Image 1: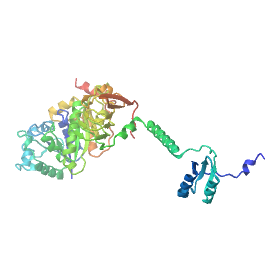
Image 2: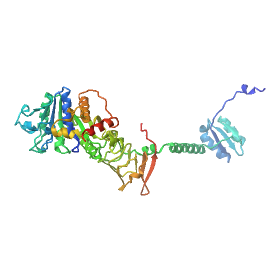
Image 3: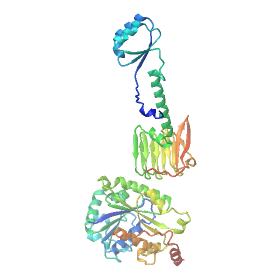
Length: 216
Length: 270
């Protein structure tokens, strides 16, 4: 007896349930006359007074039905979809929050992005429409003008004019940086990676990384 | 077919002409045929540093204009038979230079010599642009100081945009000589370190030359310092010349190791 569980044969089903309350008999029958095909694969649960005529009719159409039973955990489909959507949104928000500051900013660089791995030498003047990701130095005496966002992974010793939403710069004590017409005080750019952005018409400089950066 | 090397710096007074004289002589001493050309039209110096000032009859402009043949204008060095010199005009100015004539001259010299070394004028005007126009390689001479580095950076930028090789889609090899290094000052942090200079300029290091008072005397006497066997700068130029001739010579860390020797040497001139 104690090993009964082993001998139990069981199966699980998921099935569609159509729940309805029987009001006026004639209305109910005319509705089913028109739509009974749709309920061929459903289990119909009837609430309220169920007459013999209804029972006979449903049986004649080979429809499966139960009267006045409560199903466990039965929830309307629309509610379920809502719940699933909510769960998905939560997951997405969580994933987004897990992304690092850097990758979030990189994701914002999408329109008209130029990627350059070229040293900007003294006397060179580079003007770029849109965003720029520069993987090399800007030497003393060089000028870089960018209309969009700017990320530079190496030291800047020249001049930078940027009017995008943000800049991401390494510590650059010798640079001359003008962001939206405002000169940036280099002493604020002292961390390995600094974010400079415009928030409510004010320039905000935030340290992003204090350690050495491994760009590989 | 020889190679054409332009020696450039951007800033004046960093030792460009001294480097040309010493590297040229060093290459000649290795048994290679070498010619050095002074491209500083109107302000020639190389003849004095090589000790050949009284031998100049015809200059580069005479050859370009067809007033003299190359054979007439070439001056052979007194110290080494492999070294030749072609003088700049002292009376004309840079505006007489013309791309076509330069190309013809350089092409002819390439046939005759293993190394054609061009001494560029300081600055980045037309004279400089003409010097680098037909160069295969460039040697950049800097002093360990910010103004020299920035000017060289500018000169390299112009080289990378205006030379004939770049226009053909090829690259101009660029090599760095850091001249007049004072080891004590580098050690105490008063002078730029070679690593920092290489970071900024991002070109290959050819050699480091220590500050050497003997260089001034050598220039005045027209005997390049490479001839002085006791000179540290001379030894450095010798290594540079060997590297240019294809020898694999280890870079000497003159900043840390040379201290004692260097003091001894400066002591000699006190």
